[in-house]
Length: 419
Ligand SMILES: *[C@@H]1O[C@H](CO)[C@@H](O)[C@H](O)[C@H]1NC(C)=O
Image (cartoon, rainbow, N blue to C red; front, side, top):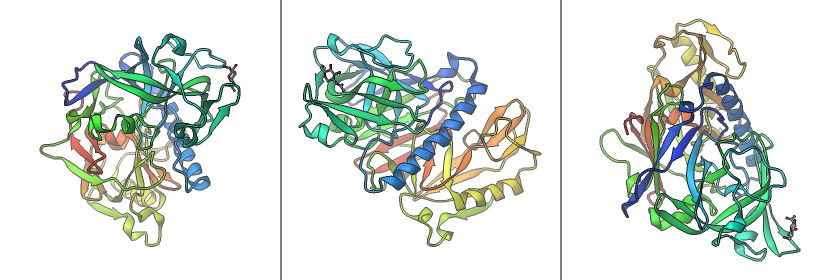
């Protein structure tokens, strides 16, 4: 996932558990913080940082099943309750990382946080993990406090943010649903550009330490979300669902297989190509390129932009350029490659369809172009140097459902402000 400090959404848990599943609300942070225009640039820049860090880790640790290549910072905050008695806090919901961590007392070095720092001493269900446990030994970048024999974790981020602290187990409660003994990080040394709204990260990836994995059978491997476009000025909340509530069905649903690869943190999909206007562009035409392999793209709710295998990206850009009649300008913020002079009215841009294996996802303008200023409209895709990343701009106004039993991701076009 990627950083989006100001266009972050706030998850607020409001719905009730009905035994079959439950739903939490995602509230757009824009509704709380007005200066989104400028901050979009931060988010986009962080998108690049994120992509870079994923790629670096891919190259350096090709065998890794680790969770350390976590996202930077995400645009979705999830309200969770921690400990006994339960203390509510907001943490970045990240489908691109596994370990859930929050800032903890005593703070040796913490980033600014609006809500009180969690005090593990105040919780009867907080338990440190011993160095000899498999929980500790299987975590990458774990170490041991030799004084106490308890496990220490380190999480590193693409923009050089990090969190270090005690590995522990603790009870997490999501509105009426308690999950005991969740592996968490209790961070005492945390550094980075985390927004003050967040106290840490909720890991929703596919790896061992992920909250999703740990909730396991109770949610039957199912979760879904519907992201309200963050630049629409729409203050409506978005939704995140777990269990039976997360089944995506009905008219217009398309599904694509999740490909098993390492690290297990990521949900890998196969992008076969894109259609721009009437022009179909396929990755399979790039014979011999790893870009056309199964699982060439991860889906990451936390990354803003979509990073395409670079050969495909340049074909797509050529197609977009030939079809958009607006005057091309350079991005006022110097982040995105392809921008147009465009004022408020609905811009004339080609329709783009993402062809995942077995699932044609028809994107809307909101998914493919980002307004970066009053007069600038930029193409929201970027070239990847390794595997692609299907970012959250592309996912807005879709109900996106993960079924980890069936190993599918489903997309259903949805007005998320009404979902
Ligand atoms: C190890 O534990 C001791 C006792 O709780 C503590 O004082 C010390 O700071 C810990 N060391 C690290 C590296 O966390």
